[in-house]
Picture 1: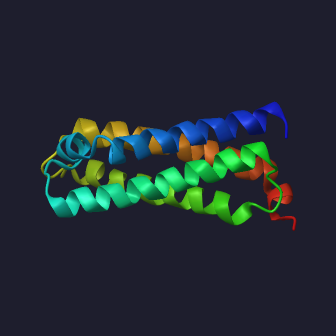
Picture 2 (picture 1 turned 90 degrees about the vertical axis):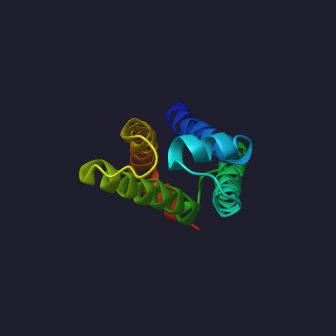
Length: 134
């Protein structure tokens, strides 16, 4: 694996770990600052999403140690999660309806997801043939 691939994977690991820690460790603060409300239902869902992000980050760490060959489904899954969350956040920005949180918080999170999505696109385009080999 060349240095560019390692860098792209490491960037995605940091992206996933950032949101994972935000959702798992700072659940209350994250919910209040980004969702605008806090309840046990919101905390539970935030923690579930945090666990998913942590699992994906651990998977990327294992791939970083091993090889990227035949890992297309995992990288497509990460890209789709980033893309769908980014599109959902854009919906709040374009309709100017942030709910109980601020538009600045939504814009910041959408930019981070956009950056992660672009890293995933670059990685997928650069390595598509290697990723689909079994």
